[in-house]
Length: 272
Image (cartoon, rainbow, N blue to C red):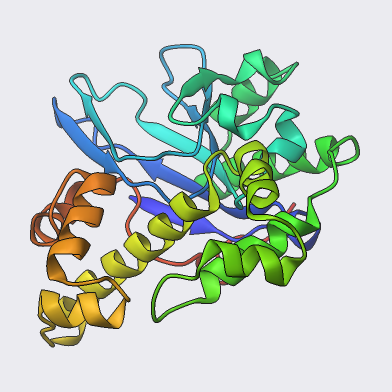
């Protein structure tokens, strides 16, 4: 079961959500498709039979298909940072981690104690409390967020009816397109144009799931028009480049995703 938890107020500018997942260890082959979302994650696999393993998952430019033959690591506890939020804690340029999974102890010191506390936590919510406590302790030495990145990410996420021209966005923010692209590379891990593609893909996944939930149907041509793609073929091409699937294939495959498309659950977590 996958569940999201909102961060406390001091961490909200940096953290999108905390999340936990329990893997069904009765299955011998677990397939999980992880889609790009413009974010970076720190996660721990909490298998009781081995030392907890902390990983940094960099911003992705393509879907990651995980096939776990043994289903080892029956519990996962993680933090998903807002775009640009992780580098404040990791002190590593985001582009050095793009499309990579690296051991957390390569960019953080003193992680072993955290892993053990997570492994012995009494519940998923207790795991989240431990992660949050760790981030609050490290917040004292965190680098300040870049206001330019915050403004650009917010603008790109607010556009619902088509792509926002990056040159126009840069001018609005008072910088050159090249400067904005370099800032995105360092803080987010991908360029603003790539981030805009990911945002639009995420909206498309939400729309693909919505008809089934509401008992309605929407054609792919209508979706392409609503989301500002040039045409249906452009939408399918863009979606497949990011996810490895066509929209129709994704709708059938979504049950295997480790990240169901959903927002943080209000009130799911009361901070320690």
